Image 1: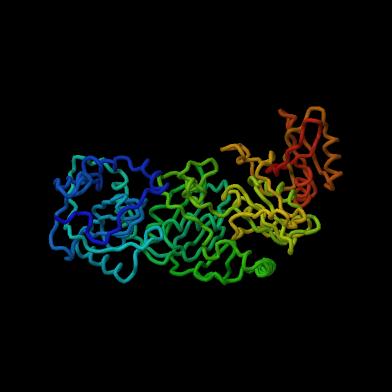
Image 2: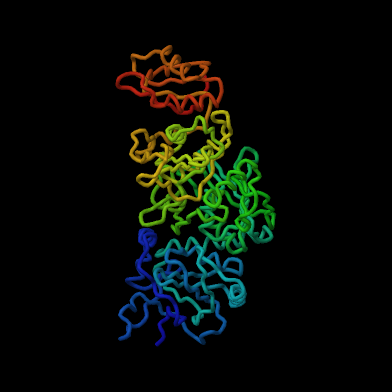
Length: 543
């Protein structure tokens, strides 16, 4: 007797569980019924197959109506799916072709079944994917008719699989919606609401490439709201992204994605930079002559980040309604944002800083400045081009904060550029290798601001400003002493004010943002007394 799940004799058996798959077990919920009473589909349980001598695992199998194999059927068999794929992603494949009435994902067996409302819809889908390879999470999957004519369900377990129910209900809602919109497109318009933390093009790429291959991204600000246009290669992937990501938070309780279909059918991208990117054409200029020159000089090692998307690391984590990234995130939230999880390759945490004032720059100065936005692990000033440096942060979202706040900021008389580097780490010089003190390791520094998980310092991250926030001021130090110390460091003090209820803190206003940057670099960790060192950060306030 043919085993009902091995519709193709070459179907790949499941491999050992990956860390993602093991984490996904937590969310499978009643899918564990597979091991007890049968497989779950659309909130229902299939009756188990009869016991046979050659099958010790039939309790996990499904008995489905079988008729002529290879003949058209409204049930579609999908092979070679990723282990961690969700019911929603399987349903997305069928949405453009008609109403999806049932779904069954065989976790660990790399297979799934999709039931359409009629054979015409199923035939259209199979024909389409015969000429155009379907993809799930970057893996090619194979779509063919099932030799089952329907997915028989036992309605006594109607609440057994909420994820399948939710996927089908969302699919129906989308079909009803697009009926009035004139059909979906391959270009999505994305609006980020409640953007408390910065969201960059590379953050969007990491998130949206989870669903499928992203071709192009254009970002812009309209009505004081950060927006983006994101182009996928086909309608199926665009719909999958809209259904999966619409309403999700990028960070905890903020940066909410609102997604709709754009009227555009193609994006015309002229430059690959921090505002726009064409991943199909990595050779486009940045539009900034200084940066293009720095990239050319540093080639092949110093390139624009993600020019072909190679540095973004979609982790394959399932979406669960949690944030997509996190400032004090759960493991799933971190994974969805491309932030490192145990057992996974580390996304890029290294920044390329160019157009520096080589007379002023030191590793310690860069450690202090970039340390405002994350914990700096290593700094390397390039030996042969000392106006360029590599800065390694501890987490990818810290690199995004640094890019957002420090790129194009005037520092020591020059407008610095900050982008992601293609280097995964900053290499320390080998023993005996001349370095002239240009490379330093700060991994054990006591000055890291964000060592504690969920540090309150994350709530006080602001762009460079002329007003600095001072803390850890001892009671023996008065206003004049602090103002004199800043003046001696080259700053022109315009105003000073202690916090009324806490004299350990104060605000100091300087002549310009550039002055404040230089003062922060010099005065952070400045010794005010035998046991007190000043803490300096940028403030959102003015005096």
